[in-house]
Length: 169
Image (cartoon, rainbow, N blue to C red; front, side, top):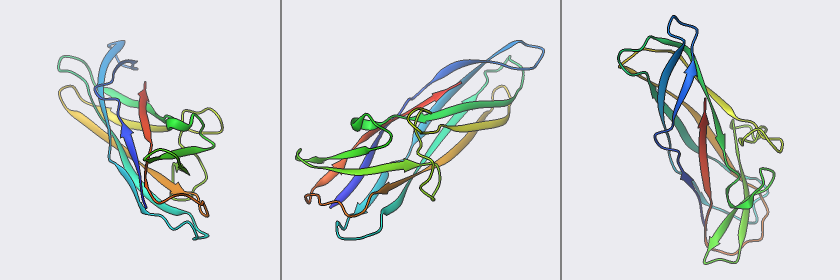
């Protein structure tokens, strides 16, 4: 059985940050991207979780020419619940429909902190840019770690979920 999580991305997110510089407000634009997370084959009889499968979530941010430097710019990266509507019990659905498999996405390879939006026991992940110089971009990234829970009696099928990546600043 192939288990994959599809990612829906927020592309071309643009926001305004107030910086501690002579220019009170700096316009920072960011583009967010994520690589696919593919779990591979799942053995329903295995007593250990399948994973970690990883996805790199990255942000490319810049300040347009003519503005001042921005130091210590941070954005917060949240992940949606997917189709399950719950951070406690994310589920991938089968194709054809009829079955689902439980999984979750964490902030590290030790499956402790669930990556979400800060609600329901989940946390967000900050990406900090030490300095953004006008006309030059900066890139920061974080890894998302996915695990499929063990011992699930599920049908042989392809499973998928769509997770939205949301960056705010």
